[in-house]
Image (cartoon, rainbow, N blue to C red; front, top):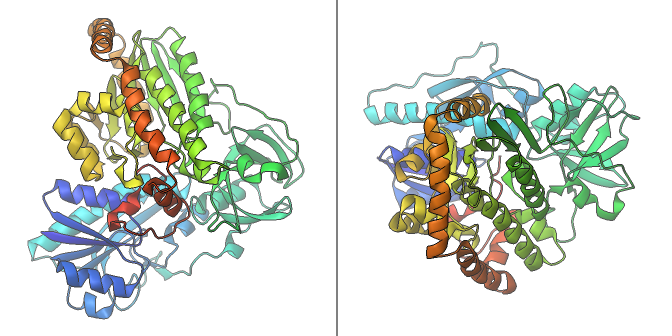
Length: 568
């Protein structure tokens, strides 16, 4: 069937729906449609058998939905209506929520129901839930709805008033999100921060300026006057509440003379405004008894080491890469036979940090520093020959983040993850030793296809192509534990030591044929030319993505920009 996806952005859910439908043999076109006229024009040009809207802020015109079946994905249970459904669910700590696929109608979110799925919402950030539990439920409902439509016999059921959750709720404005530092408890502050992550953030006053706060994590030891800034850690700020404190990783100024403000690590965003504060690093081996924030952690379970990391939006700045490399070296100094590398859930990695690069005084120089820091990290993984390294990909990965995973000996991927193993949509050739690791895994022709087509790949398709070794069927909350258990079974296996010896010999043979340094030099020569050329498309594409601006001469699907943060 020919399906047209209309979306306001090629975000994580749109990418996943696109890839899942392609896997099932449908022909799928994607159009980014900012308004009803654009929707009308897209439908006219494509003449699809079905119109599907995974994320659409525009209203589908009546002349479109009366002539074509148009299905809309709503991140709320049947009867819930309004543009901020998931925001309310997180801020009110709903616990259990739903996703509904309904038919476009005259009234927003009031059309007949084609499919619905329930979803559990653990107390986490909205964007994390959206890419995890909500995405899983949405895909289940979408695929069921598409199958029902294709059957030609299914009759969607009308929505009926009277259910306990049936209500129309308005857009959540900043006055509803606002934090009262003098009154709100830590849990209240956290719910407000989580409900606004990653967009639009919580507007607040700080150091004589107005800032959007992004992200929130509890702190169990630091205390101070409500609203007081207490400490820094890895670019984040710790701020006191009436009964505790919270860590805020990122800030975005309300206004910026350079265009749409850029979200940055909190301390970098504040710059010289930030008063002297103690820097309180967290120990790498942070016990489970601690309730605090740290973006890099290490733990051991017998012969298995687990190095976990979680960077906002999956973007890795120069500093992120250097700190993770330091932690990786510590992990490699430990007496383990298997090292698991990955995020507990959500993003694995999306490569270089375009926001930090865009905000730098010299974006070209910061681009160069960032890609070299990524290369250093990937090289360390590729040259680890005294143990097996497993990349545990619990969430989406893109560009250099995919290549970081491919540097490991095995790649285990959660079934709901989406991979974008390419750089082209950001106007980059790419580095991270991809010209070595990608063809080594999938072969030259497939490597060319993946990097040139620049399309998202489901975990199932990644397994079929050889990008990953295992697909783990589980929810986002279960993935980290399941990956650790799998590694614990791998470590004592009699074949593990022989595999370690074999990989050391293979690395030596590969090095003799062509040194890793040669791959890096060739890749970086191309990257340097791009970074140093002010007219290179990379600079325009980066700015357009970071500042949410339109970019000329860009295909609609290029809004994915796989090297950077996917929009919530």
